[in-house]
Image (cartoon, rainbow, N blue to C red; front, side, top):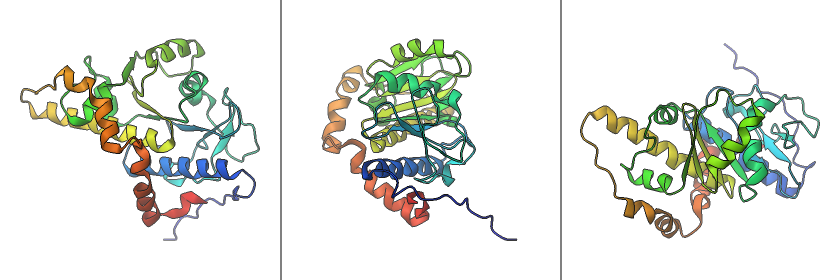
Length: 258
């Protein structure tokens, strides 16, 4: 049997600024990593990033491509309403940008917004208490976590003010009965934040499955988690792990860079 042909996508490297190209490469890498870690939901959910130097312009996945197919050149540039602002052979899903547009409009400190429907994340989002303080990973999440109640598929613009209010200035948002969301000052930060969020949820589901009484971490430790995180990462956040993650991707398939 012949291997399926890869999509032929013309390179945009010489047609965009060096800053935009680097953002495209990092965002494509983020999509590939989400797929690699098993957090993708077929073609659904999104990761978005601001375009450097362009007010209210964002990059998003081409609707219909699997996350492990996405490349720097295939990413689509859109405005705050989810409309394409440059020619692209690929469609976008404006409805899927509802959550992201609400956050990007008010959180200018966030370059990247990452949203998943992972099995572990949805499982914990369906629990009344949400994230429990039972793991080292959980304390970092709980130190900056908001919750947003489920209002159906995110198609209604009227939901945006409530979503933004529930997020506030937090880094992590649990969308009840829906999934997980993280923000980052860099794409690397958003990804590593999601890694920690997903790990906390996976550990919780497994700990609960064990059937024993769970040991909770005291509030005093949770309150100091943000400073502890800065100490461990030397205030570099996700950037400390990002080069190694890119090397991992390059060993598997460097085509995300095209």
